[in-house]
Image (cartoon, rainbow, N blue to C red):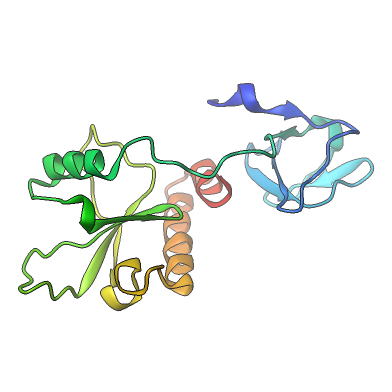
Length: 177
């Protein structure tokens, strides 16, 4: 499993910050969040197993927010190559776990109707696909920040899809990382 080096066993000194501590269940290998550790055992949120505190693995609490290691110009260049269309940095927004792209394909005079949404963990070496569309009026391009209900619906829809295809760990990482 990738990233096992950053996981540490839970000890009697392990504390959960106010934002919660991400822990990995030893039974189902799924990620859960704990806000307070019990004295001796913790119940998994997924498999409902009661597991001794010392058997869990904890992620460090100082995980940085997702950062893009490429500039918007580089992302626009890669998207242009994969989409066979001109993509400009001004037409990209990154918010939460999503990359938003306003495309004026088929639109005239900058009258946008929808914004394309791509899951954050994009691999530009493969062809990319738009996950969903949201109305332009509810996007960060119009409001400065994407409508929270729209963002939550996107997250839930994408995580449900990952769980349906048997990628529970990817869904957990998308939710909690």
